[in-house]
Length: 290
Image 1 (spheres, rainbow, N blue to C red):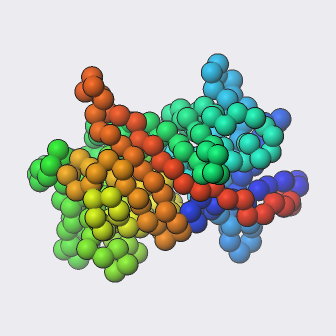
Image 2 (image 1 turned 30 degrees about the horizontal axis):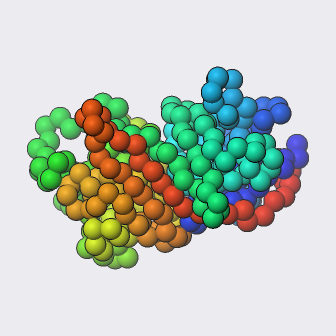
């Protein structure tokens, strides 16, 4: 079969975007992996599929597949920005604000006049059962309005992590110098740690000041990527709750800069939504034989 595609990226986190609004694609895991393969396919961190929604009040279904495994995953913030740019550029909708549904969530995406895209990432989740994270037998260290959890890693190494979900699980560690952080060494160990039954995305955050951080993320099934939208949100939320950051933070990734805003709690005590803003760029379009 011949398949039309669009290659896009959001701050260096790159995607193959497919239009399935007219008919389902029915791609196998092997075909999805082929699309994401950087030697034998197109090359991408994730495959994004645009589908028509069957839910009232929702504009589209937004599906995300890890390129390395072909598995469908819950969320991708950088991909969400590319999603709304793609839908607008392809004439699939004239709306500049869209509501989309993912595997386990609904998002509001807004295309700004300057070309940047703002995504309402919904409220962070802190309940361990919903990540999931097994904290049994562990003693946390309270910091600010949050806590850090010690994890035993290989060769007797231990490190402290803040754990939370942005629709997908994240463990965030503060480091002094993000460029020298042992991302390739510790990332795989934390990702597959027994405390995270469904594995976890691992963030390494250097705080420059209260409104600026540098971040590297080792993603589930993808390894380190140039940017991770949900990882940026998770790092900022953790930093705010730990008392290290203000409500609006610039996150500097290897692929570009993202703006994250989180006011904390609403008046009724519930967690406020996280807003993420950043670029969404089309790289090229083409056709591939599968």
